[in-house]
Amino acid sequence: MGDWNNIAVQIGDNWRSFADFAIEQILIAPESATYKSGNDTYAFTAPVQIRDSDGNVVSTYRPLVSVANESRNIITAYPRRG
Image (cartoon, rainbow, N blue to C red):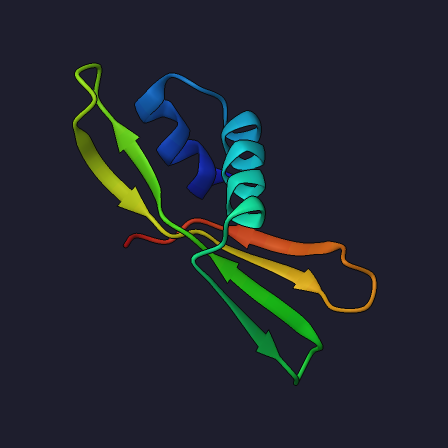
């Protein structure tokens, strides 16, 4: 929660709606999807850009979203710089 909140405050949002938005966008159009056989999950990533009021990119993150292969449930999601 804290990691998502640190990003969300940059755009005047709360952590939950920002995390939901980022996760949804990553799952709609992942940049990469890697299968992890050890725990039967997929790790999805894609860039999420934070822009200022002029539209300039001020930071980029590549959150990781881990999804169970069989149930398709989201296991975890966390932001990473990148």
